[in-house]
Image (cartoon, rainbow, N blue to C red; front, top):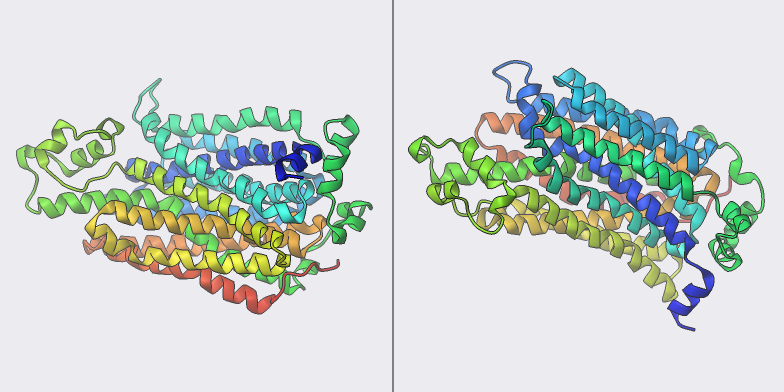
Length: 492
């Protein structure tokens, strides 16, 4: 029997559920990307005094999100384990959609910080709910693939955002410009809720409704070590954090997320600024004594990021003759497009290993080690960028793809090691660790970039941050391996 005919016999409804989670994750990252894309526009609003560069205030707003995100993850996993995936996901998405819209009413660093914190608390529900949903709807052998697919929504959200947010921010309507970027992207999540509450229920309920075949239901619950759990009410039992923190498996996931999540946060909030700064360095290198005919650097940079220049230079860019300028929103979209392939392939490789006879633990760990090597390419980003900015874009894209491949597997280690009743709680613990790491890298980025920007050497700050990002995954893999040599299911 061929794989396609087998899949037809079993049924495919679980992939509809995966698609819903994919779109929720897409919306999640669409909403959180807006701030980074509008950084240059918002910096004047964030400055506490005329002498400020705005970098520290921007970092403070980012840190407000990270602190709130970590605080949200402190308890959101247990809430989702208690109320279930359906309502846990729905409540989270209502909250973060309203918080995203609220950014449009912000006027300074404190109000931006407030709405950013509100977004952080509510967006904390996405991955615990998503991971729990996948654990409920997929057998172990398919979970990394399903996780890779839904996690690729982070890339799609990060692709869509740079293609639409700058355009939305450039158009005035009813006295708003950049505010519409927050309002419209935030409103998209409210549309998703209709489909979620219309389609989603548990596999057992779908079987009773006749929407799920018996063959697919049995396939979803085909893992022998989980069958006893599926047949009892144990999945609804509460599991305390203190009980979970006794296990090395919990700490392995904690440190795996602590070291690697900050890398993604850095790319999310500082990558657009890095590419914009690279354009500025190129302009100043060609015209160190000032631009001709009274043209300002800001005018050139604004013109260089317009999509109208995608297929040919504008009259302004032809006048100033600056080779190597890039349309950075397009470059950001290219990076996250590359990441999408990494996310899906990240789930495919361990499945291939398992199908070839390798046990689940070894397959997962081998794949994660391979993925941990590729982020090292970002160590050459600064040197390659001096030759051609697109070379830096390519290696950053490879590093982001490796992160997503790693992420698809590290999420799946939770359902490998813990019963379903604890999946959202453990995911929340790890997510909190990642948010704490993100808080630290935000503080580091703010200090480094502010310091080196004053010295006129901001590229040195980015270079240091790329070293931190490139080495994080091997560090995480070693720590996880020392704590848990084998991903073995624990008994609670």
